[in-house]
Amino acid sequence: MIEIRGNKVVLIGTGAVGSSYAFSMLNQGVCDELVLIDLNEQKSMGDVMDLNHGVLYAPTSTKVSFGKYTDCVDAALVVICAGANQKPGETRLELVEKNMAIFKNIVGEVMASGFDGIFLIATNPVDILTYATWKFSGLPKERVIGSGTILDTARFRYLLGENFGVAPHSVHASIIGEHGDTEVAVWSSANIAGIPLKDYLARDEHENPEEKMKEIAVQVRDAAYEIIEAKGSTYYGIAMGLTRISRAILQNQDIVLTVSALLEGEFGHHDVYIGVPAVINRYGVRDVVEIPLSEREKELFDYSVQTLKKVQEPFWKE
Image 1 (cartoon, helix red, strand yellow):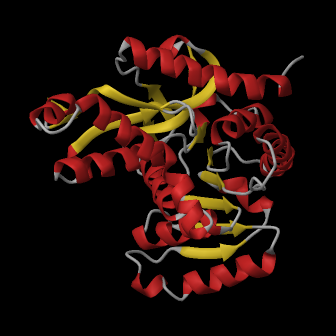
Image 2 (tube, rainbow, N blue to C red; image 1 turned 135 degrees about the horizontal axis):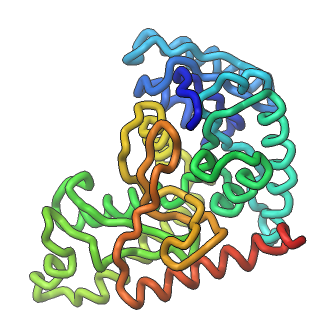
């Protein structure tokens, strides 16, 4: 069991996602100290100044500063948002290879500081890079977490809430699997106040439940493409999702969130990081929650696992 430290967070990578995460953390008063690290020192120092000018209006007096990897030594949480973005014409495998090299350097620098806290990974492809961070760091699996399907689940619950006229907080539903095109909408256990969503859909005689379910799942899966086409990238939603995970860790909340966690037999799979419901607290992933899946959902989840393994396995062959 690791020593419980203060609420110091180190953010590596202050691009659109990283800076949005810093802004969200400051606004919600989640940590006592927030240290920003980036190769673009001038930009990050500007972020630090800008954020500090808003501390007066934040719920707590968070200390925000620019730092170096040595600052990770006493951090409770290191959040990585750094990495290369996929360019037009570049394959997913090429992106993985490029970011794998970047992560090997970043994780090596963090661990050289004496860091003994929790890693939270946001860079895509997040499941594969979370696995890489676990391998590179040598930390226990529960202390390496990816953002997984935290954003996909939020999109799912938002769209369902819009469809049924209730707040997304009252919708209980999950997206699991790869954070990507093979993600799985878990309809079999989705409900509002204990009433299955399939029953809600069936109430509308003008709707075909199966078609409506398919339509919503596609909207969730393709939401990022629509946002990227409109403004270049997505960052607000994932930043708030990362903040939610950070709060669950730092406040020892024992809350279930859909994060990228290592499977060791859960859902019938081993040696893969993938988005699944997990209990999150001050020690990281306490447990993976094996929610019941329909036969079709199991098939789709198996395919999602296979998709990830096909890409990541070449990097870890002996």
